[in-house]
Length: 425
Image (tube, rainbow, N blue to C red):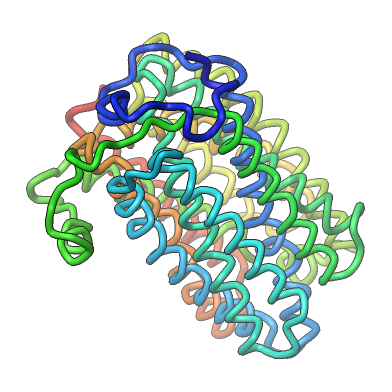
């Protein structure tokens, strides 16, 4: 059966056990392209606001306290994503819709994310701005949980390095294209938010309409209802230590990345004193993006061939830490130009290994999306923690080098966590 041409609902009920089977058939280019497109829409809707729209809006609301305003808004959104990821994942694991387990939640998440972005487009004050970003991140966080589950649901282990690299590229392209969209192609905060919302819905529609999602028969759904489902959200790191160390790896690497990138626009303006911070950000992101794409493709294929995932993850953490240390030594535009390709190579290499590592330590096939939702907390939680840390550092020491030093330390800690995982080579 084609992975591309089957409309929603085409999978029959008796195909349900396939929803819990370990995939063995390589996915086709058409399916990969559609997943890639949906991920680009998702990350564009996440990072265009984070990198450009939210900082600009915070500055318009309160120029003197822009970092505090941005930290509060970002924290509210990250809390929403933190909650939505595991809950939507757990609910999708138990969804018996004729359209499949994941697709209804993917599309619903995209729509809710677009609604939140529309609220941001008309936000007159901090309270409405927080509400808009909370709704946006709740929807996009739920969408992330189901798109992430597509990897263990449909992709064989031997193909996950290459697919992980492409997911990393989609995150980068979403970031770069989002910045391009809201700085060059679309002018104005409101139009930028609305354009991001439209694109995330289009990406979700293309994936959910054109790909198959195996149906889960009701008889395979664990009993206990919603309360039992919520109790199952916890994954004990003592019982599943590899899962715990993989979570720590993902959290620390993402925390390091967040500390190093969330305030990049302000760094270019206030520390590097670059004449046109928005253009400078676009230049750095383009360099970063090209480097990430090259590393993700090359290292993804190498990771699949060798089967040794951990060495790629450790090397990635070291390279990313080096990029941050360059800006500790020299917080200048020149150093930023040198750090951008290093960060790109490091993050591309990380994504060539991390999805394979994370999906190989999942405790049970029946809880894939829920457990990956818990893993995705390690993506969302740094967006709560990093603004608090960055706000404290910048408000007390006014030191961007101190912020980049913390970024390097966090990334190195993530690399060290990888070494404790035993089930993955």
